Image 1 (cartoon, rainbow, N blue to C red):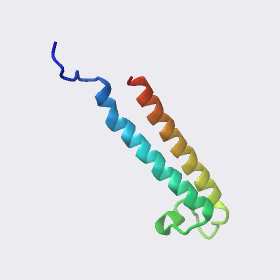
Image 2 (spheres, rainbow, N blue to C red; image 1 turned 90 degrees about the horizontal axis):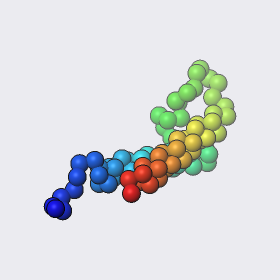
Image 3 (cartoon, one colour; image 1 turned 135 degrees about the horizontal axis):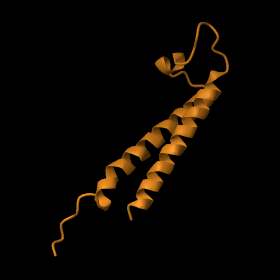
Image 4 (cartoon, helix red, strand yellow; image 1 turned 135 degrees about the vertical axis):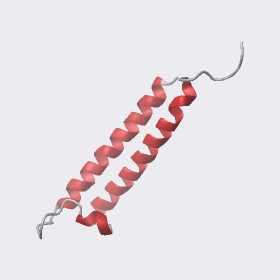
Length: 83
C-alpha cells in the first residue's frame, strides 16, 4: 500500500474549514464594530435609504454576528465530518 493521500480524503476539507473560520472571524469583528458604533466609511451607507438612517447599526451588527456564528458552525461541522 502507498502512503499517498486519496483524493476526497481528510486533507481536501482543510481549505473549506480555514475559509469558513476566516469568514467567521471577519464577521464577528464587523459585528463588534457595528455594535460599538464605530464609523465604517462605505459600510456605513449600506442599507440606508435617503436620510432615514437611525438605529440600523444594531441590525447590521446582529446580522454580522449571525453570519459569523453560522460560518464558525460550518467550519466546525466540516472539520468534524472530515475525521
